[in-house]
Image 1 (cartoon, rainbow, N blue to C red):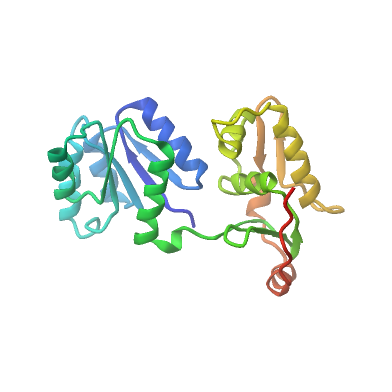
Image 2: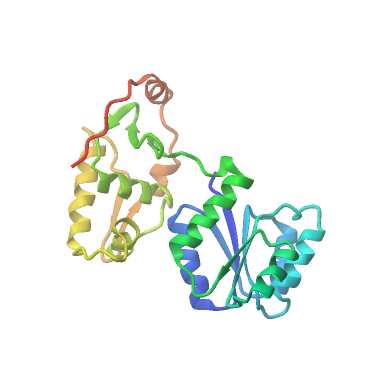
Length: 253
């Protein structure tokens, strides 16, 4: 089960960016624009981690943090404070009311994601699963191996990242541009047609004979991991053979 993160941020553009990057990491994300609304929703359901802006309409992030720490249900909720206030006294104030970490705007997205991972690892290590699964496909992040119905699949580094990216959000359609950003990174220039080439290589590697193609092409939009495939239950024999399979060295290309 992926970790669920609540983002309380009233700046819409930043909220969208945070949601996109967190979902690309495989998290389930709820976005809230007001502090008073966040207080109500957090009483209904507690997330695994809260990213909280300092200045919010309705109720400030500092006051919301103080109230959350006073409730038994949320006293241990990991809270990352996100704000434009960078003075030492303000950072101390944020931490004194119960925030676990503090990031000042403008911030580095990779750094924020690293802080989120570290906080979740400390609070809920079981949420950061090393294995992603969909249908009869298993991807192990630690050993860098992929198996389908017990058969080990040899993938190059880029195809492995593509498979991991798709497995993090079954059913979601990613444009070629989004795949370029998520797999290759924003700092590397790659033609969008390169995405088609690597998706083709991935399909060739994971599909054998009459096996169902788990990757769906959405004309004019991009690619997605078929949510019906992801929800399908693999045969027991396939799982058993996966457990008994002898690991083989990964191949780099």
